[in-house]
Image (cartoon, rainbow, N blue to C red):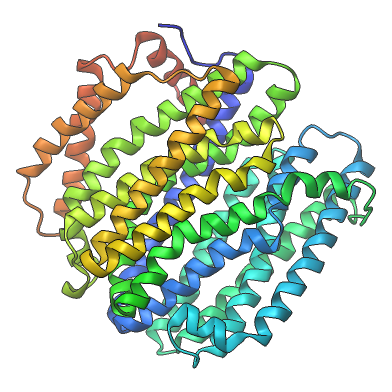
Amino acid sequence: MTEVIPTGKEPSSFFRDVAWIGIAQVFTALTGLITLPILTKTYTTETYGIWTQVGVTVTLISPVANLHLENAVIRFLSGESDREKRRRITGAMMLAIIMFGSLIFVGLNLFAPQVSSFLFDSPSYTTLVRLTFLWIFVDAFYAFFIGVLRAYGMIKRIAAIQTAFVASKVAIIVVLTLTGFELQWIVVSNFCIESIFALSMFVMIVKQDGLPLPNISRMKEYLAFSLPQIPVGILAWIMGASDRYLITHFLDLAHTGIYATSNILAGLVSFFYGPIGFVLYPVVSKTWEENKKTETKHYFEYSTRIFLTLAVPTVVGIALLSQPLLKLLTTSEYLAGAGLVVLVGFSQLFAGIFSINEYIIYLVKQTRWLPFLTIVTAGISVALNWLLIPHFGIIGAAISKVIAYFVLAVIVTVWAKKVINYNINFKYIAKNIVASLIMALGLYFFKVNNILDIVLAVFMGTTIYIVMLFVLRVISNEEKKRILQMLSKVIPWRH
């Protein structure tokens, strides 16, 4: 089999940067486990459902508000050494975000009652709607400034910023919740904290290059790249959030809150493909522009392989430990069964495959085809949710999510294969599944009653899985050597 591991100095930096972002996102996941029991045990399931709707809305609308220029700034700013050009690129995109974001906020502010009915199934949450879209506006700039720092290769600094940002959010949520503040004040606090961090990043950018200049001479080029991603963002929003909105519509906010807790656990899978994609995009943009097509291909293949090595056993392990973990972190009202977690976990698995491979489309600057790519899967998602939720409840929503993301992953992977002759190693995938199933067998007979048991179960499952990777020869000797070299770049081993 042809070796697919990239060689040279840059790949080592790539894996080191992935590790830094991974550490930051693991911290994010752990802090999420702090807020989950506090919020669910302090507020009602309906109030927690409202909080979930607010969070989903901010996450999915923010990329639309900034015109997806957080992706464009990476594509056009990476490798640019001219300070004046960098100022013009950044300034032009900031001007576009201010104009478009203001337009969205004014329009949604006028129709706040209707938006409230859509999001919360009631027109009485207009104040919360306005606060939510203020949060969206500042989040759009936060994401854009992160993109600028990514283009400059400031990965360690980004990891530090994200860690401090999440820690601050968790601290204020814990304090406000335990002192009895209403939910809207938690939303206000998140808006204020994110504003502070966005402003601090802007100051870093100004210190790096000077005050951004709103030069619009290349605006047409930037928008040609980013505008096709707006309908994609909307369609992805529909595909990613239609289940929760339709659960609220067909069932109630309590079921939305219950569904959200299982999503939080299964969503841990995203903390694998998130760091990989975060670092992959700027790196492959550089290798592609340098006409290193083979190295670009290897980055994609090995990134996907790393993701599957981590994600497959995680989905299996989370499914087996989900119910005792939810019982410890929440109340019995939130227990919906391991089957729900399995389904949502596999949807995240397919979402990760898509997330990694979609950057091929950005490299060839064919973003205009993205709306056609996602409209089919968004339609599938909405149609299946509409059909399945009334009959199967939240399990139906999870099934629709799996199918939709599977279709999306298949389409984008086929595209990647055509562009760079992307290879799919089915033998490796089969061995990975076998190793995960053997791990599951070991965990199945392990009784979990408390947090210590969960920690021991995770340790035991991880050990079994790693042993099986070596027994089944999933990792070659050359790969073992490369992994050790990678770790030596991240951790200062001493002999």
